[in-house]
Length: 162
Image (cartoon, rainbow, N blue to C red; front, top):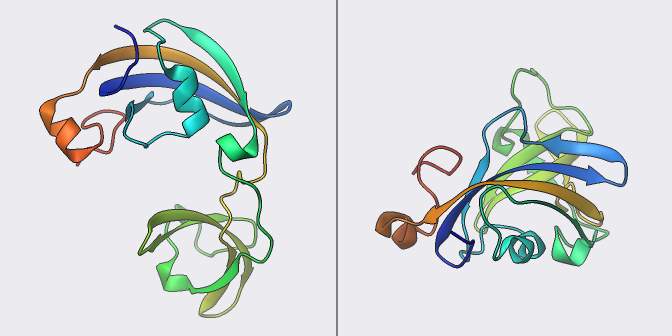
C-alpha cells in the first residue's frame, strides 16, 4: 500500500542539522501519523506521499518547510507553574525546553531566564530557522480506521492514544 490521504503511516527517522544529530526514533517506538490530517511537517509529509513500507529516503527541509523562520522578539514571561516536561530535573534552567499549553494548543518553548515564580521563554520552536535533514525508514502503511478519521489522529502505539 502506498502512502496517501487517510492512511496511517509508521516510520523511523533520524534528524540532523548539517552533520549534527539532533534526535532519532531508532532506539524507541516508530512515529505514527494520519497522512493528510496536517499532523506532520508539510515538507516531510509531501516527501512521504506515494512511499511504501520498506522505503528509505533522505530529505532536507528549509525552515519554511519545517518549523518556520526564527522570529526575533518572541520572548514571553510565563509562570513557572505552567511549564511542563521537567522530567527528572528538579529545577528549570536556561537552555531547557518546556511544553506550554495555550489557547492555540501545546507549544515547545526554550527557557532563557528563570526567576522565583516566572521564566522568560523563547516562543520560537527550538528548530525554528534551522535547515533540517530527515533520514526516513517507512515501517508500515495501512488504511485509517473510521474512528481515527473522525478524530483526525492515530490511535494506539506511536500515535496519541486518545
